[in-house]
Length: 594
Ligand code: OXD
Ligand code: MN
Image (cartoon, rainbow, N blue to C red; front, side, top):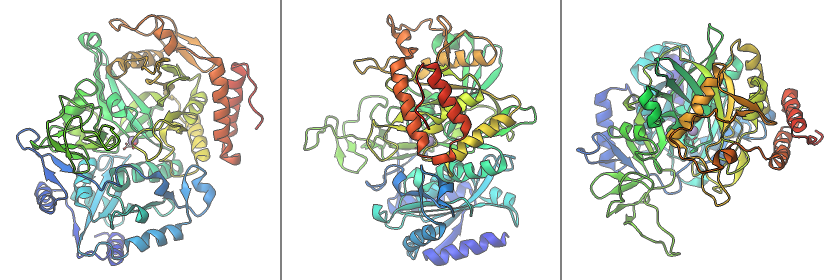
């Protein structure tokens, strides 16, 4: 027995006051028992067994449907170590504030103890956490999203290191909700929310915020990135990682189906991960990546057999659906999903719903919340890579950064070198989506898609990226992509989805020293004819607009880069300012004085 673990569980149980403490072993029998309890209490609803075998439905509190970044804190001793992009409070205050809400909050409930591993158990990349929670929904979701149970405890042994993760629903009151991270103590406390990103502590809290801190200390990278493999007709597989802000199509890209013409030639995409990558320098001098998760927590609306047939196949059994529409026949549905809306059902709030329903202002009432989710095991995905659990990971040829930009950023752009690539990543911006609380559509800087997830000062994070570049003997190439450029009428210029494969194809050709490119002020863009567009009927002039670099827009953008960097005081590495000045020079503009 791990004495420190036992003592910590006791201490937390004294704080939270559950009726009972139950250690979870991860067995099938345990799963069935917990599901039956959750169904009996109404926390989960069983879906139609014939059509969705083993699937469950959950409705969260109406005020608890997305990550609450304004209630999420990084508690380091020095405020500067959290940096200007994180909410901060001193560790003592974090423990006191959250502790006051936790105190006695589990009375009448069970506290589940969930030992879990991020990364295959025993992989050199893996990190262990132990989550305490009073939510059966969370316990059952952790079972899908992580490797958990007895094998992890065995691995931990009598004295292994682990992240202490305390979670409680308390009364789900938004006024009494807080998610506090203590990177210097390797601990996370989250109270008052049952929403995935706030409550499944292995994901954003451990695998990104805490892990990014550990990664800097230990010389690796913890990133908000998908990992995919592209197999060519000769059977060679090359791997790509990609960082995109929440709800920008990461899951769809990770599970992409190539266009018919490519499939006929023998191309295929393999999914390694859809949200998080941990990257280390391998013995061969390349960068290697693992997906630390075991499942997908994907956005349901917009997922259909055109956008992502592989996700649809993944969630046909043993999945948990959260805040979708619950149809009368015991199935689920969401806007932008397959087939017509069911004639009747209950919406994500539990209210009677039918197609065409309007609210008092005459606006359509959604059946599913825009951030409704599915949780399903990665191994159920038809295109899951045979190497997805390889303890050594997969070697990375290209790193993509992208955001959702209606204008400005071209379809694809290759960085001149690693440091320029870090600049491309550091200046990513995106329009806000439903995965975060806030005004949808507003453009915000989201460097490397890590703005809400970097557990330390982002100035130091950029320095760490630059330092990694100096240490990787054979670094991957870095690219910026934008699938979301629109025309003057607000229509997307690029079809996206499976057609994005054409861009990946050019990217991988570039990584092999092939594929034509032309130099522009912002980076290398495909030269005329270099993107294979055969069979894609793009209208006249569309490709030119997709690859257009408008000087006046970029000069305006430069000021946005500077304003963002200025927020960090002196903590932005000099190399990024050099990149900024070099870009200004290439644009024929002067960079505003620092
Ligand atoms: C997610 C997110 O849930 O980024 O993956 O919000
Ligand atoms: Mn994410």
